[in-house]
Structure formats: C-alpha cells, structure tokens
Image (cartoon, rainbow, N blue to C red):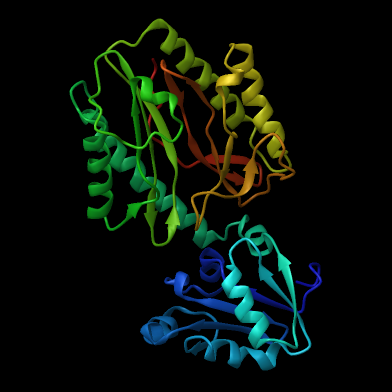
Length: 339
C-alpha cells in the first residue's frame, strides 16, 4: 500500500477477500485495510461463518451502514479501490459516503501478493490436482467411439462432486474437428473412431483449483494429427524443463512457440503458454510473450501449448507445476499418451 501511495485499501474482488480473511463466502464480503488493521464487512447471513473463519475482525451489516461504519477510518485518507472489480455503482456509493477520502484506482495489488503461495495453499492445490488425476484415470476408459462429449464431461463433474469437490470450470471435451476450439466445452457430438479428444478439466477443492489438459486418441488418428500431437508434446516438455526461479515468463512462451513454429504450427498456437492457478483458475503470473513476470519459488503455473487447425482438429497438453527453489515440481500425474 505504501508503494502504491495509499493509506487505505477497499478490497472487493472475492478471491482477494478470501485471501486476506479466510472467509469462504467472499462474494458477499468486502475488506477495509488501513494502517490500524483490517475489517471484514459482510451481512447477518454470515455472522457465525465469518466469526469462525475470518482471521480479521468483522462488522456485520448491509450498505449503507457498512460505508458509514468505515467512514471515520478513511477520513482524510488516500484509499485505493480495486478498479478491475468495483462496479461503477459501488464507486458512486463510496464517493457518497466517504466525501472526505481521496479514492485512488488500483490494479493487481493483492493479486501480485497472491502469486507466491503459502505451504497451506500449495497443499490445497496439490490435493485438488491429485483428485483431478484420480477422476481422469477413472473416466479415461469411457472415452471411446460412440460416446458423447457431454457424457464424458458429466462423468467428470459427477465424480468430482461425489469426492466433495466441484469442477474448477466448465469441462472442455472437444473431439475431432471440434478440437480446433481451444475452449470447446462439451457438446452433444458423438466421438468417432480415429479422432483425437481434448479434455481440459480441474477440481475445485476447499476453495483452491487445479487445471490439466490431456489429448487422447480414439483408435488410430491420421498421420497429420499424430504429427501435430507430437509437436505439441515436444513444445510442452521443453517449456517444462526450463521452469525455475528467475526465468522470464515471456521466455518460456518463446521456447514453446519457437518449437511449434519450427513444425509449421506457429500460427496454430493461438493463446499464451500458461497462467497462475490458485484461488482462481486464471491468475498471475501470465505466461505470454508480452509478460513482464518473472518466475519465483512458490508460484503455481500451467504449461499448456496447443495447436488448432480449423475444420481439422487440435491438440493441447497441459500440466500444473509448482516452481521450487531449485527448479519445479510437476503436480499433474495423468499419463501423456504416446500417439
């Protein structure tokens, strides 16, 4: 906050609220941080829950009483607010009730701190990925000719639910030509013999997420799809090998992109190499060619190169990694099949 030039901070982004307080219903909470401490604001539905979960004091009320309570603490202060999550209406409420505070838009302040995971967070993400690996191993035999994409996704989601978790995001099951859609959420399409099937899934367990993609073959795919698969696998393995503290995220993206370009697939790699994972499925650092982020121990990231050919098909292979003091630890253990 001092570096950002503010003496107070109004936190509204749910993942940041949870990170600061431990409150597991952060979409119905806000946090005011000042030099004197922090306060969690939520309503009476969460009186007991907030008391049991929150690591900071709570004030139970709804607006406008919430803002009125905080007004004295922000009088004459420069108060930062999260410009990427506070609504226009929310900002107008702050201006109305805090006329003596200078409101300063900020971006990414708490998100930057969240990039380095604590030991407890790493354990939570590891548990989520272990569950995802288990569920994928159970569902893999069901990915056969004649199965619908929707049925595969439903099996994944059901098994995650039965294990006490949820799906980190809408399960992607993209077969045959639909594999050219990086976010090809499961459809009613029937998987055919000789096709590749991309499955992108993650578990959300105790608030923390995992993320993994495997592309598998049903029968014998064409020589061209085999070539694409092995090019993506080569790019993924090379990028993983380079992961360690001090490496620029942009350089990792370049490693994978250069390999795919060498295989004539550079233009088919249409997204960044990866992203951070934690309380959100997509968070910092960003592993893209324009990123200024540098890897540090404690970050949890994905490495997920892909190649997508419209009307033909596509391949993505994604692993979840922990950046360690001397390199990395691959958290996803589902086999990458030889095709």
